[in-house]
Image 1 (tube, helix red, strand yellow):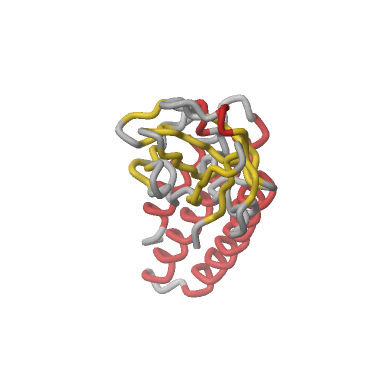
Image 2 (cartoon, helix red, strand yellow; image 1 turned 60 degrees about the horizontal axis):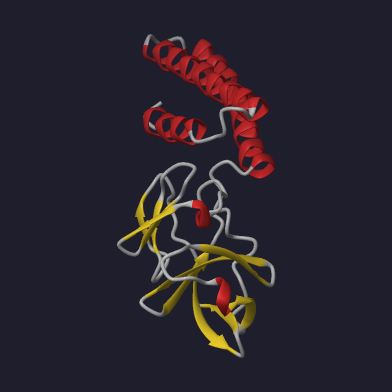
Length: 199
């Protein structure tokens, strides 16, 4: 009962950040929230019954609440594991720690973010005053390409939900993202840009 408020608040935040056109995810999210609300009502009724001395009724209501809460937990797990809601979108392709070819040097122009592919990892490259910065291009929040975002004072803003990350090290400046972007070292070699993930 005590945990319901903060837990529901984080759930509402995750649900609000899902894509408006993704009806299946939004429906499952509403069922998840509804299940948890019913479980809260059952647990509250159980507490009241126990305080009145009706232990049998309290136990029955508590068991019913546990059953509904289990169903709600299953739906919450489905949102995370099947639909990736609340999951770090960079976790499964963080990039190699070995130097990996990404793009021709000529394609990385001063002051223009550009998307590249370095092995399995999508990378955002940005040249400023002759130096190339590189971070993971897929936003950790919901997976949008950061290369389409605006860059100001060394910070890129995700074009989808407004998360902001420092280009120099991938650190999170502003949410709704909750984790930073993997950062890469970059070098120019034989007319190509190569990157490797920082460890």
